Image (cartoon, helix red, strand yellow):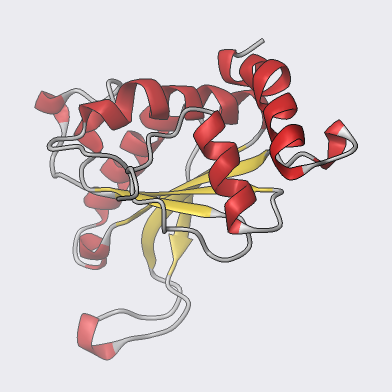
Length: 181
């Protein structure tokens, strides 16, 4: 069993039950899925950039990436509806816990000038979004073999009903939030 899943069962559930007065352990919110996405705006002119982004995404997540297409045309960006402009991967179950463990223990500490993650990036329904400016902080990516520095978005979807519940869940799982002063 994954380290984070074990921690959730042994430490997080009792702590959350005590803090939020849940009567049943099944009421305690948990991680539902993690969606990792990468936009490649320059893919409208050069399709090879998108192929390299997909390859990087598959190395980072360990899953096959899905290419995302533009929903509508924007003439200023020379973008037509249906053009491929990015990729995404949805992680669930064991792969999700394994990715979250690597994110919290390896990737986030490698971010340059890191002082904690802002704790206000919640959407009001208990979901958390995090942007990483360069894919090179992931140990799976070899710096010599990349063609461009790309950022990626990580959305952590939980079953929490409020932001406070989700913030406490992620904090208990080891997410290094900034200290509020």
